Each structure stands twice: as C-alpha cells, then as structure tokens.
Image 1 (cartoon, rainbow, N blue to C red):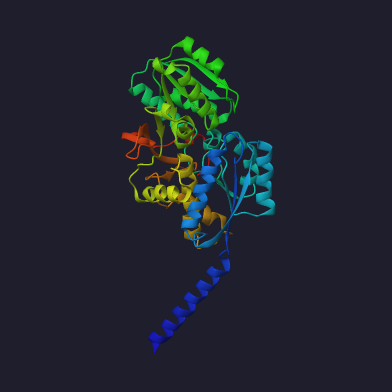
Image 2: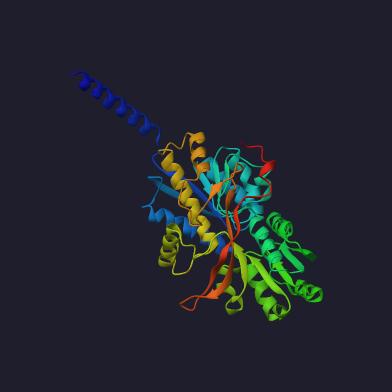
Length: 394
C-alpha cells in the first residue's frame, strides 16, 4: 500500500512538471531571415536561404520539434534597408532568432537592433573582428568562420609553399580589411602592395595593370560573389596566370564562382573550413539532399546556412521549446550540440567557432564537373581567432 502511495505521488509530480513545461513551451519558432537576395551578389544570400529552408524541410517543417515560421526579407545590399528589416523583425514580428546577412557592413549597421533587444542573431556568414573582440555580445553567434580565418590559412599555405612576394587585393570594408590582416598575420614573405577597391566593383583593368607591373609570385584576393567572378575572368584574359599564382579564400573558388567563370577555375587553390567531400554523415546527407532539391551543388555559403538552422534546431530542442528563457536558450546555443556538416565544431568564449581549415583545389570529378577537392590534412587544426582575448564576455 505504501508503494502505491509513493507511485501515485511520483506520477502526480511528473504530470505537474510536464504541465509546467508545456506552459512554458512556445507554440512555434519564428526566424527572421534577412539577406542579400537581389543584385550582383544575390547568389550568396540565395544559397544561404535555400540551405536554411532545406534543413527546415528535412525536419518536417520544424525546428527543435516546434513548427517553424521563417520570414524572408531582401536587404538589397543596403545597410539602411537591413536596419529597417531588422527593426521590423524584432518589434513587429517578434522573432525568436535572426539570421541571413552575407556582408559585414550590412550586418554591423543592423545588428544593434537585435542584440540590444535580447534577440539572438546567428550569423551564417558575416563575422567581423570587432564582434570577436571588444564588441562581442552574448546574443551574437558566428556560425561560419571569423573574418580573418580563411585568410590566415591562405597566408600559412603561401608561406608553406615558399612564395617570396605577394600582392593583396580586397574591397574597402570591414571584411576586406580583416581578410588582408589575416593573410599577413601568417605570411612570411614580402607584401609588394596592398590595394583596397570599391565594394561591388566589377571592372579591374587598373588593378590588373598594376599587378602586371609589380610581378608578384602570388596574388591573394578577397572578392566575394560577382566581384570575384569578374576579377578571375579578367585576370585570366590578361594572361597574368602565367607569371603570378592566384590563391583565394574558399568562397573565391566555390561553386557559384565556378559556375560563373568556367574552365579557367581548373587548378585554382583555395582555403576553407568545409568541402563537398568531407566524409562525415551530416555532410553527406546535406550535399545529397541539396543537390536533389535544387539541382546544383552547394557552396560553403549553403553549408553555413544549413548549419545555422541545425544549431537553432538543437538549441530549441535542448530548451524543451522554452524560448522565453533567454539564458537557457543562450546556454544551449553556446554548447552547440549538433552534427555540423564541417565535422568538429565548437564555440569559443566569444561565440566564434573553433574548427579545422583545409586547402582545396578545383578539379574535375567523376562526372566531369568542376568541384573543390580537399588536399591532404587540415592546414590549421582546431583554430580559433586572434581577438578572443579582447572579449570580456564569459
């Protein structure tokens, strides 16, 4: 009889806990997705959006077991538009999470609206150095890679290969400045020139003339999207590849660039935290399902959009859908217990990733398609960022 009473009390207690838990659980997850979806650089935002929505679809339209409402908006590659959209998402739509922005200057203009309102922003691409250091925020998570990291890996690669002289080229904004700073941090040779162009520039005749005159052994460029497509076409047409080795960050030789440039990409080397051929189960599923859904191979931008969705999924699930408990959700975001398509991944204390970086080469696969293939072991293993010590967040 005593056992029955104890059992009855336990069952009642469990039911009460379940009732309390259900009272706190949200009825859905709202995600505001703001990205560049029009103009010359739209392909980057489109890939992030498509992969994010693919992850939701594969989860049965849910994130963390709750129905997911993803509100998509185009920032038009304009900081003021992004700021307006962020304000709308936070104040009118009352989203639980914000994500989507491609470019650092766009994100930095809009971000205060998010982090100051205690809405979580998960960056699927932009990860500027100030947010890793002095301006770090408990509500900001960089799911991609620190702005400097690909470039640090490229600088290490150039040093390993013994290139004695380098010419550096990037657009004049935060990510461009971070990129060349990262390359120089690990490059041991001589930088013969460091040039910053207008963001969105598509004609590089003047810069190519200067490169021809300088005759560097290696040219390192940071030119995302349409900028990169145009530059590589013009670089190859000018015949400069005969005397100067072109090395680029991963996005500078990814599938969107390959589609735009074509056969001239064959043999180009780049650095990345992800590749189509990473052998983990999550990545195999992602690549297969993305190609099946969209009839094209995914880019690293797509991989980041997919991981962002899966991180939200894991955090909501671990929080039992209790999205009103910001501390609990933040804790579960920070722990990042999800199967990333890049393999090993964890957040540093500044909410920037610690992960591996690889050298990739553009080759032809078994189907004759131009794709990136990872070469050898990681060039950097469990690599963090250079600014974490400036972050006072614990």
